[in-house]
Amino acid sequence: MSSYLEKLETRMAITTDMWTSNQKKGYMAITVHYIDESWLLHHHIVRFVYVPPPHTKEVLSDVLLDFLLDWNMDRKLSTITVDNCSSNDGMIDILSEKLSSSGSLLLNGKIFHMRCAAHVLNLIVKEGLDVIRVEIEKIRESVAYWSATPSRVEKFEDAARQLRLPCNKKLCLDCKTRWNSTYLMLSIAITYKDVFPRLKQREKLYTTVPSEEEWNLAREICERLKLFYNITKLFSGRNYPTANTFFIKVCEIKEALYDWLICSNEVVSTMASSMLEKFDKYWSGCHIVMAIAVVLDPRYKMKILEFYFPIMYGSEASSEIGKIRQLCYDLLSEYQSKSKMGQQTSSHGASSVSNLFELTYDEQDPLSKFDLFVHSTSEEGHAKSELDYYLEETVLPRISDFDVLSWWKTNGIKYPTLQMIVRDIYAIPVSTVASESAFSTGGRMACVLLLGATYYGTAVDLWSTGCILAELYAGKPIMPGRTEFFTVKPLPCDPSSLPKYPHSKEFDAKMVRNFRGPLLELLQSGDIDLCFANEDETRELLRDDENASPEAALEFLAKHCQWAVVTLGSNRCLAKYGREMCPVEN
Picture 1 (cartoon, helix red, strand yellow):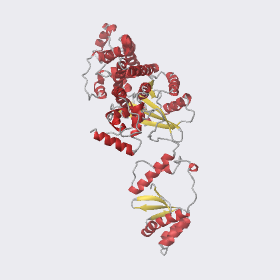
Picture 2 (cartoon, one colour):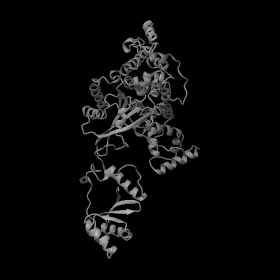
Picture 3 (cartoon, helix red, strand yellow):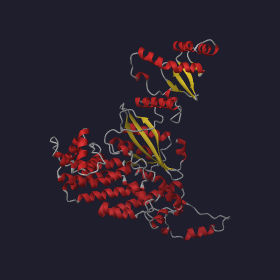
Picture 4 (cartoon, helix red, strand yellow):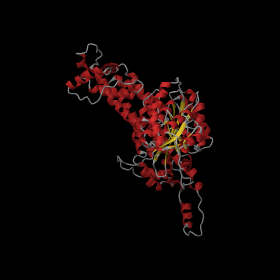
């Protein structure tokens, strides 16, 4: 993978996150994102490394820098996407300072730091839900009461059927640290709102019936949170879309919050005010990549900024549009100067043709004089860049199945430098988390591929044992790859850390009885190839002595041999007498 990535003529983006194991050990997961020569989007976990405490910004930056240098990726990096914690902010500052000396960062590092959009959205919505926590408490208590025991669930469903309400979804109590669970709890409870007062008449212990006003507020909150719920799933999905998709979603959020702000319901208005404050705090620095990406979408170009920015920035819209436009020109100029592909570049349209290439007379080409003539008579002020020509073309019609990567793969020949920019920018992810953990503010559970790890916990030991038993049962490998890591260093775990139990003679006797029959059959069929420990004596007993009985061989194995290679059909197993069996390689 390292060799392959080194050969790719494109920049790569990185997402990184810390994960804590059950043993309270911290690991850094590093994922690389890129678009290959066929214009397909890829992401791979390339390192999962133990990080010793304390997890300070210095320690984290050293671990990440080691990876960049080991993989020769320090000069091909576009962005790093991380969560919004102070240690990550400090880590990015340190890395930016160290990498900026090489001059390899895009736009002098202005877009180097990407904040995880799913995490930002989580903070925004939690800020809003904190405002209405009192108003929804009765609904939460009602759901908790009627989902507490099977008998109560049955009573609730009976009452719902009496009201002819379909019981398609069960009541679910929310987790207060996961805002999406609160949304789901409210949305399901609302469908059964008529059931709760009916049950109040039958159940004396049930006293927390929500009022009509509380139900109306819950319904209004759910309708408004649905947008955030859907966008968060988009931000945090594993099959993430390209970076151009996200800008419009961010604008939708800001527009929705402005609508909430003028709502006649004071609770909703207060909620929106709190969420807007959080929005402005985090989005100001990370929408640049999204904005550049959407400008490079032929369906939108600068028109999308001209449509949304007046809503988002009001009187400052023109200034903000100008900033994004200038960044696009700066990026074009930067790529042209480094690739030496451009024949024209501009700073907001200005020409610097003569600085980038020189025209000379070629005797083999009669029209080279014509090229000199055109160059000498052209007015420099009218020269245009690739970006100028691209923006002047009419935007394409919006269609749902439009493949922007395929469009640039095909049409990029007209804009070779812009094509290079698109390939780098569209590979940048805006989220570091998968949908299962996007809403969690606590510790995350992770399903990871252990590549090059030097420490394995008990969970991996259990997984390994399960694989061995499954392969023995199936009679064939169930997972591709080599299994030597079960027997060579690094071992699955330190043997001294395993629990110790007293020796049980009864257990040994039972195992011998269970194993005696199969082993005798193997001895009689001649399927035992070789026994270790006193190898010469074993060979003599099993192969040279024709008068040796199977029982005698069994007794010999019990006294002298610890392990034997046994052939079971086409499978070879390493068998310990009276104990266990596991597959071995030929």
